[in-house]
Image (cartoon, rainbow, N blue to C red; front, side, top):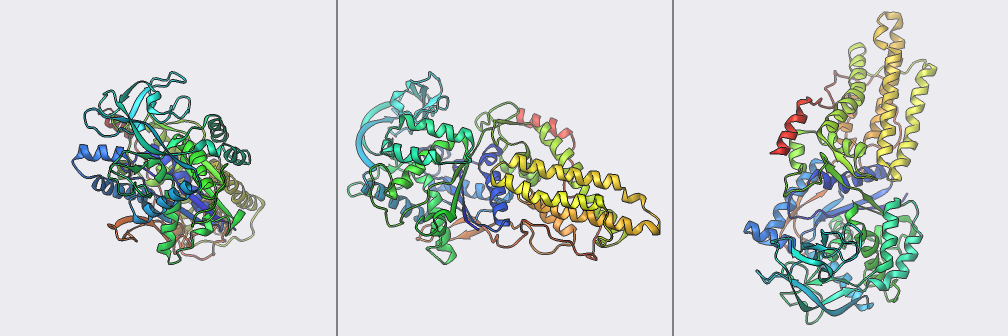
Amino acid sequence: MSHVLAAVAWPYANGPRHIGHVSGFGVPSDVFSRYMRMSGHDVLMVSGTDEHGTPIQVQADADGVTPRELADRYNRVIVEDLHGLGLSYDLFTRTTTGNHYAVVQELFTGLHANGYIVAKTTLGAISPSTGRTLPDRYIEGTCPICGYESARGDQCDNCGNQLDPEQLINPRSRINGETPQFVETEHFFLDLPAFAQSLGKWLDAREGWRPNVLKFSRNLLDDLQPRAITRDLEWGIPIPLDGWRDRPDKRIYVWFDAVIGYLSASIEWARRSGDPEAWRQWWSADAQGKDALGYYFMGKDNIVFHSVIWPSLLLGYSGAGDKGGQPGSLGTLNLPTEVVSSEYLTMEGRKFSSSRKVVIYVRDFLERYDADALRYFIAAAGPESNDTDFTWAEFVRRNNDELVAGWGNLVNRSISMAAKNFGAIPPLADPQEEDLALLASVRAGFTSVGELIGKHRQKAAIGEAMRLVAEANKYLSDQAPWKLKDEASKPRMGTILATALQAISDLNTLLTPFLPHSAQKVHELLGGTGVHAPMPSIVEVDDLDGGPGYPVLTGDYTVGARWEPVPLVAGTPLAAPKPVFRKLDPSVVEEELERLGS
């Protein structure tokens, strides 16, 4: 079995996250991690809130608080929301810890020592009204390459090319619309062209990636440009070089420090585990080689950071870029095994926009609906490989027709009949061909569903699991155990129900990565005890290096179901079940659309 790193995109802490965010990074990473743990792999799932950069400073100024106070507020909101969804992080932390600062500065100095970070004078954008630096992403204008009128100062979302803000035609501030001033300033740049050959060789060796990710990444290699790694900022990580570290006006740029969070979170987890070197099992090529696998989950707008920039940082620090060099004190670091990028989730035909109130925040959603209902929608109809539209009508339909009438009905009527007629799980006595056929079909799902999840085809995986649910429902309807009322027919009724209950138990295991909350309920309805689907906990911790405390998500995931069929024990007491899922009134659609319109 392998050590598997599940590296999950870091949500930005300038506000609550909406369901479009978690459809890209949250639910897909959790489904994969739960499956891999159930299959016996040693998984480390890490992430945290991304808390540096000018957007935090701008929002803090608007709210009349400090950047740290703003980050504290939304760090807690995001932790609570991800906890509500049941996302099984081994550690969900933040980028304002002493540990993160130290790891970021270590990578900076290692890259600098190997010649991959160079100083140069460039033009910086300044807000005329405030005198503050405008970050590239807060400058908008017309792309000089494709003519797209809403290109950002760091990248054109239309053609995908990297840009510098002074290249934009008619640049303007997205904060207040004013035209920025460009002044000369000295900064450090990541020498991305020095990775063209090593990146190309690495990308050419990738197998099994989603085609859109690989094609997009390869295309970026055609025009790599040095990328600014520092900015004129007050809020961020100090530059760890003599003459720079004490300057109050220069900080490491947020995009650089955020991607290093995967490594720093792994190191923090190890330090908290009691074995400070444990992180190396997931990161060090020297220690594990091919046994260590790393999967990175994000939305498609983050592909460039994970398939080009982050691999460049790892190559450069390890001394494996085109210029060579020596590994830093952390040693040679593993590159991603796969970059798993999702497309966009839209909402009622419109792009999610907090400012335009076209948004469904995770917290608001979970106050009204079950977490597993959202998880199911994302898995079954989410933006895995194409942009997908969330509509309330489709959400209600899938909840009522598939979760309630399909899976929930199978569980409820089977356990109800067994509890009423036997009071316990009946014995599987003298099974007939049709009984054995259903059990064999469901058992085969451990291979078919598991392989699909392992290949990041979660939509097909849950589709296969629900096909087996439909097969079990058909079996129960065809066998009609409720018609076998006389005493002579009761053994046959018991066998049919025992078959159905065994199928339900196995199907529940297949659905556990997708629906962990309801999986625990079904496990208990079948008379099971203990933890079936382990859940994360919110734990208040002290900063390991003396800073302020903060909440983290963590958990013990060594317990729970394994990815295998487990025979039910005849005679296990059963009680009349409670519904596993809630049926939604169709009026929900009108209510939610009215709320959206307001």
